[in-house]
Image (cartoon, rainbow over all chains, first blue to last red; front, side, top):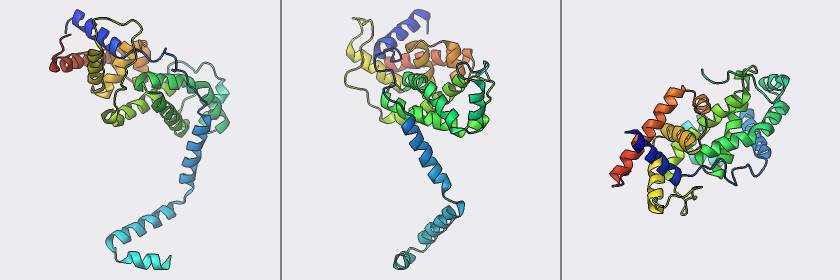
Length: 78
Length: 184
């Protein structure tokens, strides 16, 4: 690709996708800290579940996958 | 690694130390100080304000998770920009197939009468189909006209590698436009 051709493609690209960085609306319209806090809280809540609860859940899921007939039994005992 | 060679400017060193130790107040201070800049950087890459807001939160979540790995002697801004670029690249990799162009493309600051709306649309679509790594380099260098040094730092590659990616992006774009019968 020669230089004039490269310049032409560059110009075409600039015409097709104008820069957004300096446009109106490129500014952040709201404070994102409350959303950030929520994300951190959700993360902390998930991390707060002890590992053996996850292990128990995985065991039960595997058990039900191998023995689907046990599903009604499980529901009866719940 | 070519990034982060300057100590962080704009925030006291002890705030960065506290952030490294997992202090939430220090993290909040850094978040409030840098959220606009991170949002602006991501917006330049993904060109969608709603996605850029989500990715800003994703970026700071990654920053918070990696707090212990941050070196307070280095630039927080450059580190954040690097993480933001990675988050935006991940977004482009997953979202590129289902992203539709808006009906009305934004008008260029100085419209060229020789470039029709149809040609602009086809070019924009062809550009969206480029591999994300090439797309990001070309977007930041050619469309947003960011300094090559900053782009290189944000992508974690050399300036030469950025130029190569930009060149490959233009070559692929020309090939795709020619395939569609558009001569540049």
